[in-house]
Length: 455
Picture 1: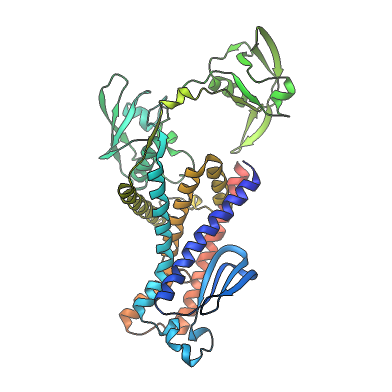
Picture 2 (picture 1 turned 180 degrees about the vertical axis):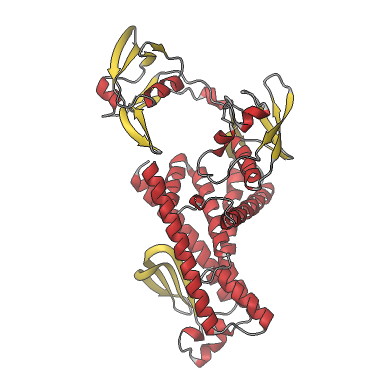
């Protein structure tokens, strides 16, 4: 993945999310009769600005892009002309102030619904939930899962793709469900039920593919050890390997699949390997020394080659389902709701100490995911955008002073006590909110840096 693609995809994602969020505030503020002074994408020194509209609202793109704001007319922030007093934010009823503040996060949820709706109409692709080799001595192995089985249902929820299975089991793990019943269909057409014990599973690290920790691996057709591409200046290129070479053996050990070859290369960093090669009508011996690469704190070998894959072998494992507009909209709202609730549950478990805070991601990790999804295509990128939009909406609704949810908390207190909070109480709340927000940002950046160091 190229750095420019990562930067561009991250900036586009950030821009879309901020614009939707702030436009929610702006639109509802205008509908409630509040005068908007500035609509800013980013913070700090303005790079571009232009006044536009009846109220001469200042539209700004600022230097620091991680956020934005809508500045409204407010007597607490400066003198207001007598003729503009009725359009001041602080003069509006509590109900209207709540509507204006809540409109930002709601706009993020609406964006997610629209994106998911488009994706459901376009067609959702995924790998069929067919099991590959089950890892020994894991919950899946103890439950009796077998390679070649297809997961049909988990609990009462039907499963269509591997991603469905991952999502449903992830929810079960976070909810601390002790035993989950999984319905399977084997290659002989026989239905089976597996009781998957998750009681001892620790959900404190959900960054990786936790299904592998459970022991479930997706089925992949055996890939022959034939080279499709050789990376220039890699160890394989330096040794003289070419595209279409077939690896017959490594150090006199027979190689029957690409997985066997990868195992030999990864397990011997910096160690000379004698490869028996079938090239055209000849059989050659070529010595190659894998380059040593550190991956997740482990030294592995790489020689810079890619396998030749026959797409027809994977066609039967792919499933694509599309829906009409009405059904897509319903499914989009369900997906947005489920993801929002799941995000809240994860946050609650982090606060309770049941899930590690290392699952919190910052801008570096988000940028990396943006680049990866963009490289995979439009649909994965839009799915990523929807997920981040939901996360932003949920985060902003948390009752933390300085966030939208903190302001909503102030208004709820105002309704109960019959009058606004004192300036001193609100100032203390802002300080606490800033401290919490900075702590969260520091945690996220620490996690980002840790992932970079260990990758």
